[in-house]
Length: 253
Ligand code: UDP
Image (cartoon, rainbow, N blue to C red; front, side):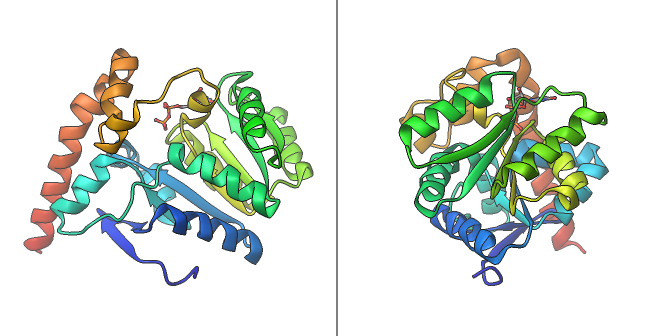
């Protein structure tokens, strides 16, 4: 299973082109196989960031698996003549992952977001899935590159978590995981962005009908217009333009 999943390419990055259930099966297989594996969930904004940040681009190139998140990537794939099977975003993946973890007795460690948020997520999800084992949590505003970071890594490893979810936002979470993967004991290392804020109830998610239409981003923009204006209003057209430019360069090379 690990070797045989289909991929598609956008720019110089290779995404898994899989259904949500295959993402869950992949995570299950990784834990059973026991090799530490990075999974990054990448949207159009992340890809835009790679154009200004070569280190981030390299980090994504070196990842074990990239999941495709959001309508921007779907549209980018369509422009390239490819069909993205599913939107494997962290927010939809998370409850399914908790359910799977509860069934298989996999344990989770939550790292990231403001103080108290990961603890709230732990409470909410263990109420929802009583057999779920969240073995530790840590907010994301610690002093990186200090002893605090080393203590965190020790705590993660001592917790014996199978899955580490890191919610520091892109590109920090991917860079942090790439830099520390050799020190980390959990088998599955996933970057999940703002996910804890949704599941702690701090930021409500878009209504289902908007999500089904691939328009969740419009709701996010409505919630935080100042912060997200650049990401969506400038970022979405820029992303499409970059895909078109890449398509043109491929057909002329
Ligand atoms: N965050 C953090 N530490 C930091 C910077 C950010 O824990 O030093 C958290 C922040 O509180 C939020 C998440 O990272 O919960 C970033 O959310 P955002 O929606 O910006 O991330 P994206 O999904 O766009 O990557």
